[in-house]
Image (tube, rainbow over all chains, first blue to last red; front, side, top):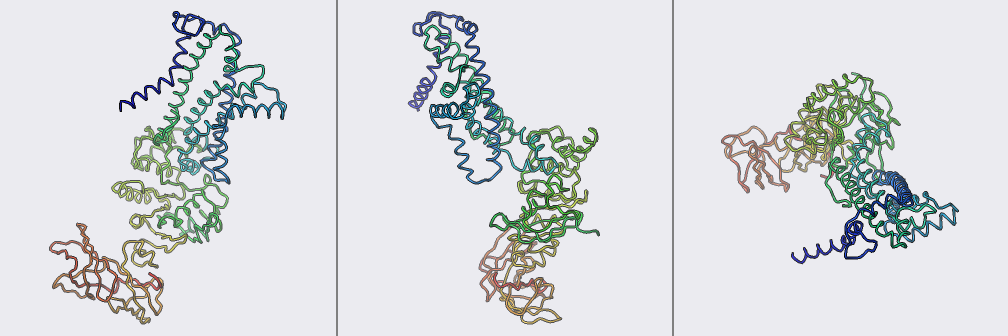
Length: 267
Length: 366
């Protein structure tokens, strides 16, 4: 038991110690990222506010993340609905292929998309091309979450609504949607988070307007801007934790509402 | 009496290669409580869903109030359904659930509220309107589902095994309550169940289904006393079956010989499926026979045998008796009256029976 406890503690340190260094140096009054620490300062956070290029990158990222999350969730709703209610040929195969981007190397996906977009369709790289790539990698997550939401929905609830005189569309609006809404919110939040910090695909598909991770990567060439990146990273970690927690709360609330037992989610 | 409220004519239903319904003809009268009874997989739920409009027919016609229902979707049919899982909307309150079907009606807000309260009162849930539906017990959900369906005053109420998820005590209470409710509102009820006792208690008529066909359609008493096939006889209660032979058939009755109990003269209606000269099976219910105790006199016919098994239920004792000259045990149920002893296993005993309680089956196999 004792060994197991030590192992668990070591495991957590290995996972989180590097991340814990972020805030440490974000508040460190010195340009060099090294111990000993120099003293406490807010100036790196203040520096964030006075870097317009960073602001543009953050806005680009937020736009891309929001659009990709909405697209991935909309497509995910269709797929999850089809999976839960309909039988069609090659169903398992098709659903399997939808999940494959989950395990494909992102660099391969990025290169392939670049070839397709730039060489075959001759599209100009822009925020939209990044949205395309991010929707692709967010979809497996969206579908995994939405599948469980739609599977937990008792089919006779929808039949009951139709039986009571409602049209199929109103049934979807009045019964299905409210019951899977927590799953939808959870899918939006997780897709948003994934898109926001995705680097490789964004690196390949972004044009003249970098996303935030691409901007950060570009800044690594300048040692002087490293502490500012640390400050930015601190904010991002905090934001990610908050978003994931909210997503999980919504997922659990959905289970409680559908009256089923929790069989484990992402958290 | 006007025409039937529901008329099914030659209804077939197949899923690919599998034939679920193989020609159902059924007329259901207005205000009737009809039960579709059968083992799982007999097609009873499919038939109910065809009437509700959730399934189409492969062949045949379904008429409701004389109107052909082909192509009429479930939301346009004058039927409402109580689902096995109740399907009470968990994200709404009790009152919102009951009012769900009224959304499209032109009633004013206060009229709707009054109707909802009346419907809730009818099912014994008066004052529960503001409760959240997901916090209700199984029995209460059942009642909400009932109120929600009845508030629309459907021509026919369809009930898909509504009581199977309740515990025994609650189930018995709901059985009598459903019956009372049906008499009160006068709506035609169609109940699907696999519970023969429930069917006997509640129905005006019972359609027993096996393998996609209606084996017999009759009121409970007739179904129990005059089953047409051995399958029906065994599905409804316990039926002892002995091999036998029709010896003679005439205007005065039918002369049969039955293994173990000998010759008997029965009325033609005791052979609901007909009596042909030749071999067949004699059915006899456990409660129509008696185990005779030492010295007991009777003017009924008597046979002798050995007690093979004794099962004591408190109010009743069930004896399995093997009559001389037979090899299959007969079940005989006896009330445990005061002063009546319980026989031991292995004891020899006399058994009395009455020719009027024999049901004759002309079938080959048993």
